[in-house]
Length: 602
Image 1 (tube, one colour):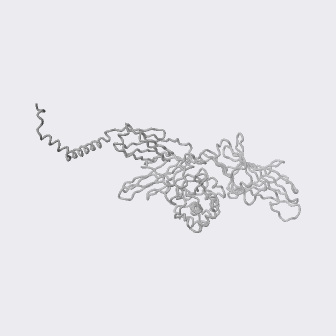
Image 2: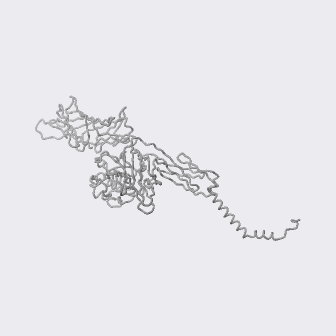
Image 3: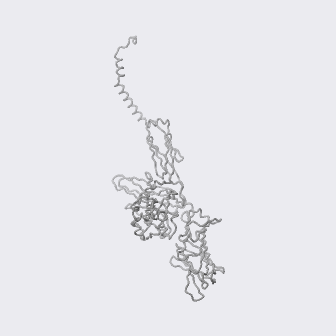
């Protein structure tokens, strides 16, 4: 993918001088990359060569491209078309341009242009157009350079572009982005266009209870994050409930009978956004303390970790150190590779895969006082040599996130892919191809991601992720179940998470706040009302208002009449006992024994 602006000149000398290098020419480029509707990129290079010496001139110009497929090559100067020779050396394409009449003399300038179409610089993946313009070669760089990227308006809104253009403007048919030499000296241009990326997924979980008694367990379903929204199509079977842990994982609870094996099939769609979503639950800083702690693979208290973390100080400095220090070892990209951890990564810098890049970043960041965590998930790649993954069978990848205190948000970065792509910036922005399965902050190993739930007789791929062609319809639904007078239960029966619910229970004047209720999740609200309190309500129904819906349940006296009856019998018994044992009862008996006054019987 590295784009070499190699300059090789056929030199003629007017006298017998030693061979001179290409540095004897001042070189200028004005390059336009115009992306076409079909994804091809029309490249126009306007090149100027200015002699620095009087006794030398160039007869030929060579342009080398690494891993770029090209067609329709042409070149011309002020006198007309120029002769072109092309050759292939492995993945490298070499274009040679023979000049018609080179300009001789100090400060004389030859101007010509080279045109071709590149076939693999832009492509549509799912809902997103991705454009990658490789960086300048470190070996041969021009003295003057300007690059224009023209993108069709039909590609939609800009999701992100890196580096930030020096300037930009819009035409009727194209959006124009301008870059100078310093901006792409060490990194290429990476841009994505579209509102969001869509993946359809199907995940299989294989569970087994080896015990002689029933047991419960939890599995991790892909959660919403600030940059992704999950829409579930089906969970077969449905979980008993879903809860959130301290890292924001969605843990689905299942019960297995003795010796039972259970296969869970989860399907749905995920939307991945370039910007954080405003409705997503935002955490506050006090919740981040466990994202600074030491773990097995993140030994924050290790001396060399402490020294390096405190010297590097910022997330960007730590990221750059990790990218510079570690080398990716493709021989370790296989199942069962031992996880080295942060210290092991420092001790074996040439043996790293994505877990080592991630572990070292997380540990150094925590040592520097920056909350950090690991993400395990799916990452789409068109070239596994440039953007490699950690596991082969289920295509998993790991990358870190750090907490941005000013924005109050977790920021994903990918030092692994910056290293393997030769400098594509994955710090300012990752891309729209990173799908979060689980979050490891409080624990560096659990919960386990989809693809990890295996039994002895489970074979094949358990993670299926493909581009989605059409967004699935969001169907928010809520249901309320009454168990009066004990409780009411609110359940999310829809396919998306519900945020910031404020259920009200009347006439009890109960007002609650539920920050998030994932699909399949239930929230039981205890009432524990007594018969006397129910009677005092002077109402014949209990109603629950939630998510712009109202649910009600009639109050029935029969529901608690047995309690009233028992209470009445107890009261009668107590009262009778009191009357029997007191003097008023003896007085009544005495009156009955005496003869009545004569007037009574007269």
